[in-house]
Length: 98
Image (cartoon, rainbow, N blue to C red):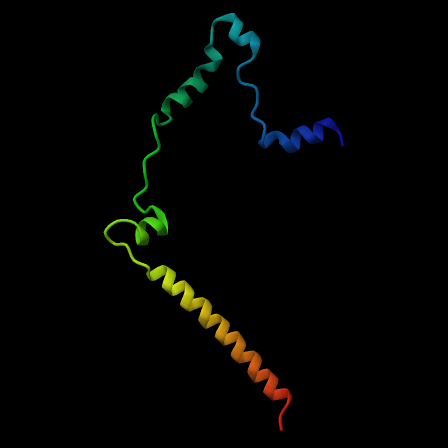
């Protein structure tokens, strides 16, 4: 592979050099104005907490604590297993008719 091909493929992953040593040592910093402006607009501090909190927060924690998801999961697995077993039983009797 050619180095230019690799550079082109990794172009989206590796950010370009924005702050070069010559730009920083010259003291002007004019080329970094866009970068500083971008970072100054980003939110500061901790990320806000989400209200949903997932299944655990919704069903197992707090005043609405319930085992309903666990019960429905157990019943769903049982129903799926029973359906598969019943279908296999019917196929067995179809092929071995008396």
